[in-house]
Image (cartoon, rainbow, N blue to C red):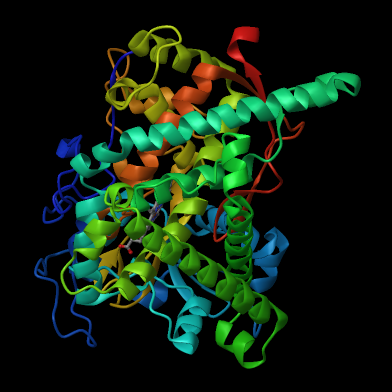
Length: 556
Ligand code: HEM
């Protein structure tokens, strides 16, 4: 299959440096007036002395309704709406709960969930409007538990936790590294090498499984990869580590020799467990005032503190160890982006460490889960495996080696990534607090209100996606049979604008290599009898472990 890829425009390319495929022509210019009429109004809020520059009064002004009139679910004294959310399965099913609220109350509604008063938005033009008003220093919600933790420990944290000019300064520095195509290009071979090792390892694992199961229930066991999540975590940490430190960390052991050389794999597994625990405990506190949990030292708070302490200490140790190793081995170490980070103006090693630690926290979970869902969907939709194989072979030849320069031709693999993230957005809500009043959906929204863009709902809305529940990667590929323009703001898995995901390019390249090469090598079958649902642990994770059956292509 040939064709170009639609809608590669989730980041605001006007503001980010050197981004490659500038398909921004169908997208917004944040200063344009592109919104529906009622949303043009910017009323002056009494608490906000500086109305937005686009502020103007017109005949629609009268139709703007006050904030208090936003649709709100029925709520009961003291418990509010908590019992209804519990009936959905609690915080782990918040995405489904909010989805049903949108169906009941419309594309914009307001609800107090536990301690958090939030306006939920499931409409692409409203999302566009939020982003175009996010200002120079966009502000998002940091879970209260994290804020308290940072205050209590006095630990300096990375980009996600920064705000204002400090955030802007560091963000610009990181953009020059992580969103700069020439820099990414310097590391594509390394990222590809990690995938080579992953494939070698998975080949061993499934062959071992096949051998061990030959006297047991052969059909059930053969080719089974049961530790998919852990394998993908290792791959994701190894990839980022390789790029940052310019040396292999040893999370993807490829041979017994390497295995003997390093005991790091166990450490990585422990780190991964702590990060997972951290997300689980933070998610549990979505419905609970974290301050209360802290004041009464509730078990959930104790577990959160322990996991946070362990994860940060381990990540820190890891980073310090690798900074030292890179310095001891300058021939190798100088290849990493670490040097570029340390070379930024007015930055000391301490700050670099906190930034890198938080990059690992942000990268490990997200890329691995996105890839896990992609592999799951491909295993359930074998026709796309065949189409991908045909596309890959048409570019690299039969059994050819995939290289960086081939990736731009893999439009279907890119479509698979976008389609996966449409259906399974790693972050199902994107939050913003604006520094100005705006009108959304005809309602006056005061500055500082917490806004949550419901990506799970817009991503599955028939209004934007025909056959919304179906996995159709080709909807993202533009060719003779598909010239339709996609509504870019209805699926924003990496966010949008100047505060969108800084690791997007790295994640995409990693995933493109892994998916194209896995399909080249293996035929995938689902290893679970049942469909797997979503369970939120702050991010979109599978309700039960996903198993895959990998069958080597030559034996299909
Ligand atoms: C498929 C993989 C990934 C997904 C879906 C994803 C998604 C996101 C989203 C939705 C945001 C918030 C954007 C917004 O508020 O508008 C974000 C922020 C962020 N992501 Fe990612 N991410 C991924 C991979 C990565 C990787 C690999 C890294 C590290 C290299 C990373 C580092 C960050 C950081 C540091 C932020 C905070 C940016 C800031 O506050 O300026 N992410 N990501």
